[in-house]
Amino acid sequence: MVGLYTIFMAQILQEKIFPSGEIGLWRIEESESFFLEQLQLEASEGLQLSRIQGKKRLEWLAVRQLVHRMSGSVERIPFLKDAWGKPHLRDAGMEVSISHSGNLAAAILAPVSVGIDIQLPVEKITRIGPRFLSPEELASVSAGNEIMHLHVFWGAKESLYKAYGRRELDFCAHIRIHPFAYDPDGGRCHGEIRKEDQVVHYDIHYRIEEGAMLVYALETRKFVFRP
Image (cartoon, rainbow, N blue to C red; front, side, top):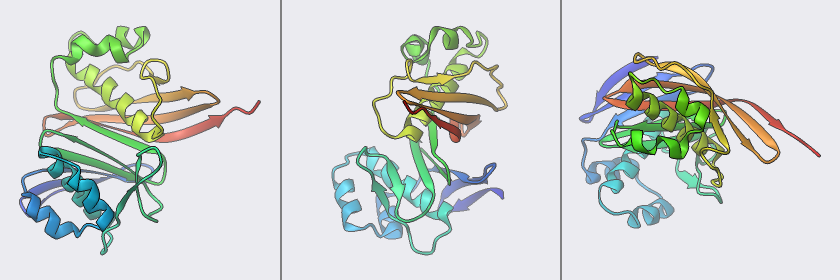
């Protein structure tokens, strides 16, 4: 089901993705007290929140409310973090990834390794492109849509970084996005992580939502090379 609903002032995009999984988008318009009343945080989550300051508190709360609604569970499933700091849902059997930008919160749930990124476009990305793109990737950027094309590359690499979840990845050396033609109406590309003894392939999807570039990635194949 694809839908855009108004729920307690917020708008949430909830969409099934192929072959299985779901993405969601929340426009943050609520107060902190609204989310605290809805979420009923566990003690460990309350401790995490107490260490967060300013606007990031609302982002932290909103994305958890979004994931709760996406899960379809009556009882909210708490967020946990593994030893690397990657978020996951307790005993849910689904991988989760989250992102925030401006007043938007995005999330993805799927039974495979996933990552998601949402970014409001900024011109400065044209200056930092060489820092996160290989020469081949940089040469493929469309001159007519440079800013948005670069944001897809950035969102794709950020999504793969989150899907991998173990940090210690260099955006140029370990994450490769296959060059693609940018489509303003949204599109698809492919990427891979090459690190030590493994290669992991991902399908990557991108489109503009609420004026922001939304990118998400799902693992398709994984190869581990044994000596």
